[in-house]
Image (cartoon, rainbow, N blue to C red; front, side):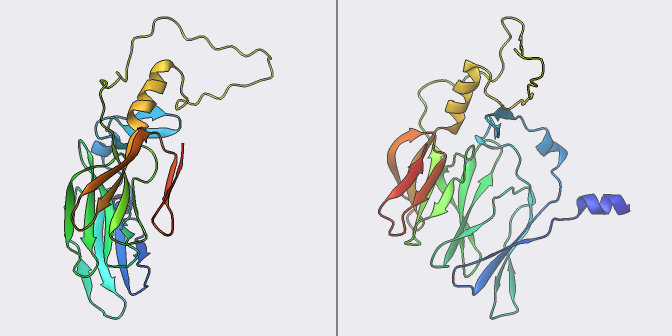
Length: 239
């Protein structure tokens, strides 16, 4: 019973303050994933663990509780979320009026916005995030728009994750003293490259937190890093 209680206990809560330091979110997740989460399909590509069904990270621990607290009051607001609600750590807007996070569902990853005063949550219905590579959501300096990596429109069919080998896999080291590290996440074939390109390619878009309008920026690509400029007029991208 003692061991079972430890396994079921939540992790130490993550506290996220807003920029004004007058409110905070208390984010508590389960310590260990459930068996259903461990059974989720996964692709190991270039050091990434991708869920091929929802195009998100393979494992996101479920949220045990999410609370909003004002520092000038003893009142704590319990934000109502289902128990099966895997979410990312919330991120405050620069003005501290809102917060945002991604929710991992069975077949997609969606964007949620929260009110910094009441704690009310609202999904952005038409946004499907690409959570395979990097952080898919970040606020822009104006506090009203978010820079998101969303799923790109795909003309081609999804490459098959599994293929019958056409022959034996032979590995050889030229010098006896060399040792080859067996890392299963290396790109080992053209098929692995196709899978990575398919799942990691995203479309940059600006999402308005008030109207939920989506403005696409540039062409889809594999972005290793995306960051908005302090004045909100430019976006720094790394490929």
